[in-house]
Length: 122
Image 1 (cartoon, rainbow, N blue to C red):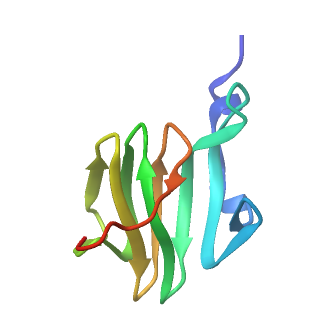
Image 2: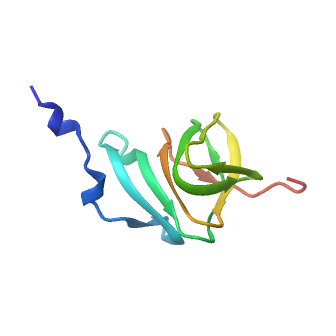
């Protein structure tokens, strides 16, 4: 049987990695994997860091997502979330993300996001 130590991720000893998806690097957006799922070959639990002025495009969460703001502030659509705020977005919720001041987020994203076009008038 494994000890509890084998399940602990010491994120302070890990380096931030640039967020890159499908060959696109998102300037000023970095991640650290907290839990890697070998079955799906992805990390459903991550830390995300946005440098001041960084953004992530409009996208869909097929299985929803959970975000907890650890530092700074982030803008999701028109809502400003600050340190200590929590957001649950239900499956199929579409939004863009940006941070004017910079932030660090804890994110639980059960399925890969899908980039989508913003509909006219939204």
